[in-house]
Image 1: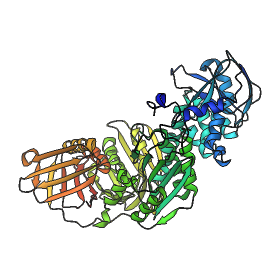
Image 2: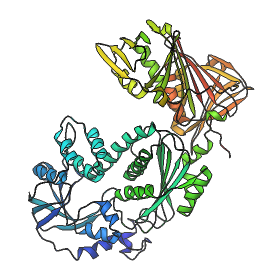
Image 3: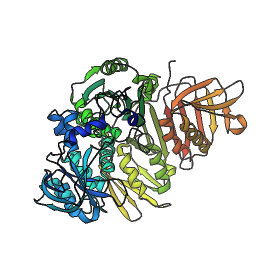
Image 4: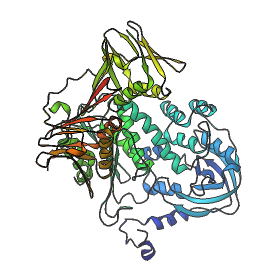
Length: 382
Length: 247
């Protein structure tokens, strides 16, 4: 895609229905570029560049920055890119603004802030596989938080406890009903753990997904196995998540299919596969999406009190024309797990049901877990 | 009732072996010693372990069944020093086992045995080919195979009189042949079965410490590994169901 763009200049040679590069300009027209901001700040953002001396600051926009809300309200991709294009990412030395960054991160609702920039904010919409896009960027001269943070009770407890390890804090908060988005904010701004430090947002998102997944995996491992096969499916923003649950011990596999003409798809379909049993070694080639989807499945298994083997297939069509971040996969997987499953007596029927949902059975060839379930005998077969 | 003392290294070895397979188990105690048999959630692998009273420095017990949380036990074992002595004490009808080591006094709540899966019966299978091999060599072969694939074939060629292991990946292939001279013992018979390396890796890790492992295989049948622990005062049997691929 990158190679084509300079040549194409938005003429649609890449096959996408809309050029992600030019669409940012539609949105930018509406933005008045000023060197000061007064209004709401829903969350904070910590960059990856220059670690451990990252740039950090508040996100400035009149939107709560909670993806589940975007989905619930039925925002389109255009709406979300629009919101994010006029979002300003304030940037500054982490240490200089840390107390105000932490104040914003603590709050469950957006806080009013006043920010002065060194020069008018510049437009620079960046898309990324893990993070939600952000359009404007400004180097901060001064930040003032005009309100007090509205901190939920469990958050207050976890933040005040300096003997509570970060992993335990994350798990406790999740159990007490704080959503992953807020937990990520707390972790990245260095409010959790014994030896606290700020963490780039991109790493924090996956860290929270992985910490929670690892704990839930252990509890799910002790549950009795599911009795039948179940198939779930849902689509959000061109991301179709189909999940097959099969009886047996916890075993997870994710297959990611980028259709030809989709964002990173190239000409033909691109398929990436990764999986795990009890332990996961190394970082998944599917990146953040792997951990986000895993969390949704584990939440479901713990809710029904069963262990299972799970195959997740993510099929991305060209309707997903701008990468919005891993939250899309998390919300799509959650939506899928909330649907009424199709119950199948055999693996064969479950696979067929999944293929109908996906419109093709090409995923079966890539699935190692599928092959294993088919070929692995049990001791009672002898 | 159980009142026993045991070397911490022996105890750690025993727990490690069980932990390779299950997260909780029923431990049967009798006057002769302790034993357990358990299958994993997917019914693919089975462990059968016996530890004679000779493995303990002192042992006094009446028959009974204990529910042990192996994951928790493994964490406790991790705190024990090397060459220390552990004393176990469980009163009649007690639900808490007292474990004393290096000055620590640990009171471990036992699991209700009724919440743990019943002991499975050992499937009666005939496995004609038998190989005796050092645990380290076996573990190395498993590790080598896992580099290229997620499954491994174990077999014996009776005509050429050797034992072989073979793994086939998407693009790579690895094969190891061991003749009678390179093994401790070989009883040849036609055999070849395919196994998941996921399970074998966990088993291989604990078998690697054994001087001698007896491997029994058949044609598309489970594999049985037998080896001794605690200076041969205990015996372990692993049984693993094969994968059968219909091509």
